[in-house]
Amino acid sequence: MNRSDLVIELRARTDLTAPEAQWLVAEFFSAIADGLAVSGHVELRGFGVFRVQTRQQAGFINPKNQIYYPGLSVKTVKFQGSSLLDVEMGSGD
Image (cartoon, rainbow, N blue to C red; front, side):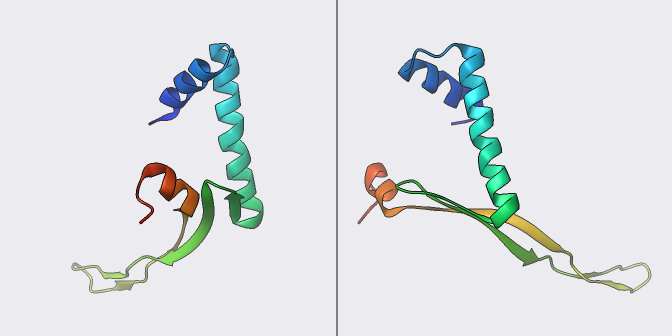
């Protein structure tokens, strides 16, 4: 499901207009992004947790000049679904 599918599903479940549903979805994702920027952690009870993690890229040697270039630190967002979400999806064994 992508963002436009989410807007369509939201409109089907509510009486929102298309612009209202698009605004709501955009604000929801903006709030998650803002929370990750501030604290690096957003928890939605019953759904899951978004966390910012830092990982190190692999370094490499340039074959032309044999100079080693170290990898950069890269921030990524990880999501871990809650156990309630696993049960809802049928994978909570």
